[in-house]
Amino acid sequence: MSPSIATLRTDVYGLVSPDALRGSLAGKVALVTGSSRGIGKHIARALAEAGASVAVTGRDEASVKSACADISQHQTPCAPFVADVLNERDLERLVKEVETQLGPIDILILNAGTNMFMPFHLHEADSWWHMMELNVRAPVALTRLVLPGMKQRNSGTILYISSRAALADLPWTTAYNCSKAALLRFAGSLSAELDFLQKRDGFEKNGIQIFSIHPGEINTDLHKTSKPENLRSDAPYVLELLEKLSANRPTFSPQLPAWSVVYLAAGKAPELRGQYVDCTRDLEETARNARASKC
Ligand SMILES: NC(=O)c1ccc[n+]([C@@H]2O[C@H](COP(=O)([O-])OP(=O)(O)OC[C@H]3O[C@@H](n4cnc5c(N)ncnc54)[C@H](OP(=O)(O)O)[C@@H]3O)[C@@H](O)[C@H]2O)c1
Image (cartoon, rainbow, N blue to C red; front, side, top):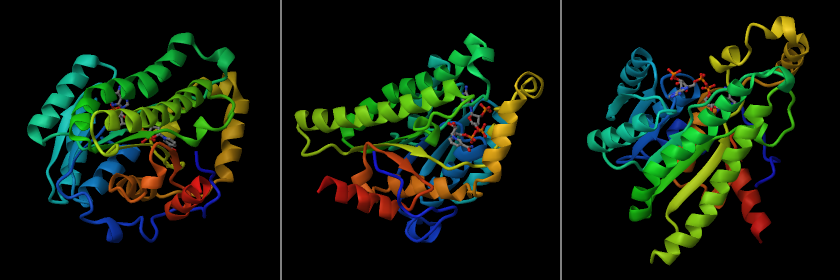
C-alpha cells in the first residue's frame, strides 16, 4: 500500500486529464457497474471519451438509458444493460450480453455500492449485512465471471471502488468500513495470485492489472441516501460529526476519479498494480513513491 504523501488534488491535472488521455483506450471494452448516475456515470463517460466502448448498467432502466444516451455523444459505442448486481442470474446475463454486443470485456469497474451511517447498536442486522452483500459479494461474483476470459487473453484491468474508509476507524459506519477494507484486501490478494498463476500458465508476466481506489468525497445521491430519516431523532451526534467533517473537507470534482480510472486502465502506472490508490493524491508522485519504496 502506498502512503498518501503525494500532493493533494481536487480536480484533473497534468497527465491525469482529458487532453492527455483522449484516445488512450481506443478499441477497449469497459463494463462499469452502477454507471446510471454518480461516480460510475462519470467514470463511464471518461472511459468513452478515452475511446472505449462502454456498457452502462444499474437497476433503473430509465436512468441507465438516459446515462447511455448522454455518453453516446462521444461517438464510441455505448450500450445500456439493466441488471441487479445482487442477482447471480442478472450477472451471468449481463456478461453474456455485453460480450455479444460490444466484445470481450477488457476493463471491469466494480463501482455499484452503498453506505448507511448508523451506530452499530442501532443498525439492524439484515441491513448491516446487506452492505457487505452489495459492496463485497456482488463485485467478487462479477469478477468470477469476467476473470477467466482475461486470464486466457492475459490482458485486462479490474478496478474496485473502495474508499478511504477502508483505512480509517471512522465511527457510525462499521459495515461500510469493513466492506471497503475487504475490497482493498481482495484486490491486492487477487493481484498477487495472478502474478504467480499467469507465469505458471506460460505467460512471460501477468498482463492483468488490478487496483482498488478511493475516488475522493464526491457529492452524489449517496450523500443523502446514506443518512436515514431516523438518524436525526435516534442519533443526532452522527449528523453533527458528519457536518463537522464535511465543513473541513475540500470539494472534489467527479472528473478527478473518472480520469484517474482512465489513467490506471491505460496502463500508465504499472507500479501501482495490486495497490489501493487514493485518487485525491497526485498519481505520478504516488507511482514515484511506490517505485522508490521498492528500491
Ligand atoms: N460519493 C462518495 O463520496 C464516495 C466516496 C468513496 C467511495 N464511494 C464509492 O463509490 C461508489 C459509487 O458511489 P456513488 O456516490 O456514485 O453512489 P450513488 O450515486 O448512490 O450511485 C450508485 C450506483 O450504483 C447503482 N446500484 C446500487 N445498487 C445496485 C444494485 N443492487 N445493482 C446494480 N446497481 C446498483 C445505482 O443505480 P440503481 O440504484 O438504479 O441500481 C447507481 O448507479 C460506491 O461504491 C461508493 O461506496 C463514494
